[in-house]
Image 1 (cartoon, one colour):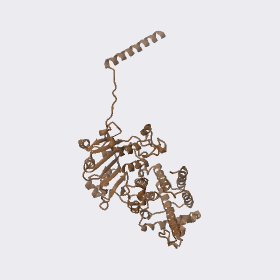
Image 2 (cartoon, one colour):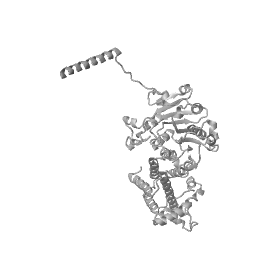
Image 3 (cartoon, one colour):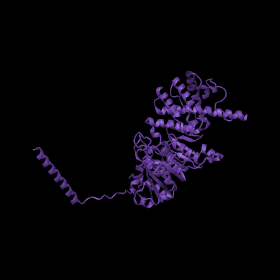
Image 4 (spheres, one colour):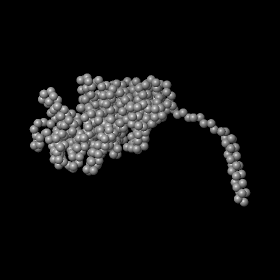
Length: 512
């Protein structure tokens, strides 16, 4: 749990950057990522030193070599524990002219985060600012994995709250719900083809740690967890660095976070590779045919990014693989041939499991679009029997631009620390969604007037367009209102009119 003191420390660092002339929130996050990475290298080297001294054996992994760099500076000076004590101008010289060039050589180590640091640059030239930030970062206790992860998550939330870069961040509680619904397993290979800050991959990793802790004690599963389980693609190099660091600070050593334009590049190398896809991709409208991957065009002939992403998910999943993805409402009822084709494919060729309609304010203040979560399984041979629909009306936060908490913190999220009272459900539907999903057998008897219900595939097929909009199937109960007969209403109106006329006559006599 992130304490108020740590939040205040992070806010203070953020304000220092702002006062020092680094005003773009994404640039602040990038520079803090670099500095945290530099600090982490020192921590890893120190750990190896202690291990070597305890076991009285040579160091297995020496991050900072013996000797001097090509500019004649001892590598020892490049360590955080050393340069943090230098006066500001010397610290600036060491970090800018020695540490960052050293960072750019680490890609050869083969790690994804080392690769993303190859073009790392210090983005400011103010020695006093560097000294302030190093001093304050050094005081934040980041030995504990949970604290490191939560601190970085809080920094990421500062990007979102700053405005223009909120599109990179799906609300954490929505991510948590989607992960709870898909229940990642220790043997899964998980992919987010539009990974951004890697929120979905981080949440999946935390789920594994919480629900399958024994898997991290098995050498093969532990190696799988750290090196083969998590895959994220993005075409923004800043996001790759930030996302990769997010994974590291949440205890995943070597996730595969790589540069890729998911809709433009061919996917023959990893088609059918992943057992779980979790994603909320950006929906940018339309792409040119020339810039769209040909293997996706074979699945669905369209320029619409929201449909191409669904085609991509199906392409990447192996048979039996499952997905939980956010889509704009238009996917559910769009009337174009491509919209119908993709819905027909999900229903008839694969197994569509659920449609969860989200309230339109979930992604405010950055977007007010209506969206839904689709859960489906790739089969290639159909299998859809009944589709579960849920009409989510509240997520624990106000649905305006403020997004203020409607409940205490321990009653928020998909798995709140405290159970919700019945009246609190109206303010946070997420725990109910998870509970009903895990007890789908009990959903069979719910009427279509309920908040959730099952729809047989025959009903969806009967629409002729494979319509998946909840309103198509939801029934609304109308309370019967008894009205008086028209003759009685007219008689009552005449009586009122007579009473008014009589009153006016009496008033006239009094005044006369």
